Image 1: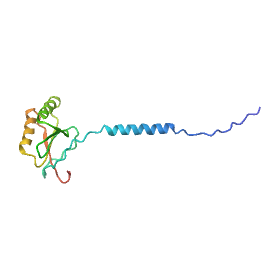
Image 2: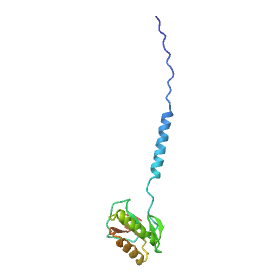
Image 3: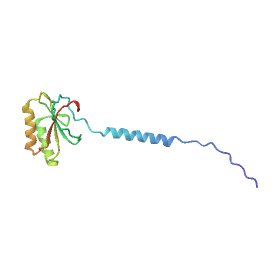
Image 4: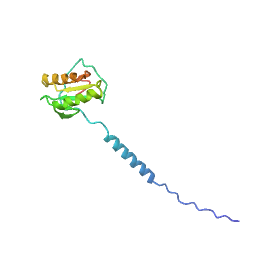
Length: 139
C-alpha cells in the first residue's frame, strides 16, 4: 500500500491575539493614569525656613492653602470660611488624627493664619503643620 505524502501547508502566525493584547495594555495604562491623585498645590510663595523638619511625602494629608490676599483653598480648590468649618468638622468626626498641612504665602496676613489654626484646634485637630521652602526641597 502506497501512502501519499502530505504536502506541507504554509503555516501563518496570526497577529490578531497580539494586537488584542497590545490594545488591552493600552487601555489599562490609560485608565491607570486617569486615576492618579489631583494636584492640591496652590501657586504661592512659601516662607523660607532653615530649621524645618523634613517629613516623608503623604498623599493623605488634608491641605489648606492661604494666598497673599487671605483667600482660602481646600485641597486645591477655592473655598469660604464657612466651608472650612464644615470640612474640619467632617474631618474631626472621620479621622481626628489626620495630618493637616497649611500652605501659606509669605505675605499672608497673620490673622488669616491664626483664624485657620484656631478653627483646627476648635475641632480637636492638633496635627497641623506649615509647609515651608528650603533650597534642597525646592518651591
